[in-house]
Length: 205
Image (cartoon, rainbow, N blue to C red; front, side, top):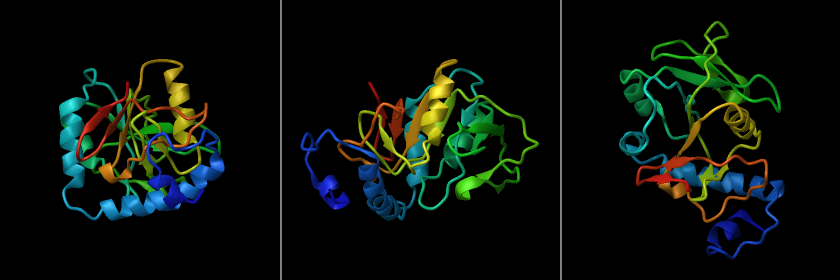
């Protein structure tokens, strides 16, 4: 099925055989949609307002985000606000293929170094942190909490590992234009707890 046909199908019209090939076909179309949405002014600030009004964190809970690249929604307004409230911050680091992410401490103004897959990350001398809340980028999302990522499976493995040892909340940050009716998924795909856009904060039931 071509990506444009998939996006055009109404809710309930998709078949059950949603595999990796379908995800791969959707990614370029989803990235085009995200890029078009990213051109609007004030989106990151609007998402930050929605997030701060809806999502509560334990006092002092560590928060992971991501350093934005390409057309990803910028999480830095959220990080600025959370840091001011006393939450330690960290950024994810790819340590190897098919491995969970690790998280290194980061503060506003800290220098970053090149990481895998075009990412910018704290240097290896920074403390390793276990976050209680993750701000997660995505290409597309649905209201069941599934996200279309870039295909590496890093966040799926990471969330599975973190949730196995303690409570953690995963929040997808997106433009509302990135919503689709149903993201292709299987048993290894970790669901988000929230998706926050400039239009609303969606708590996944």
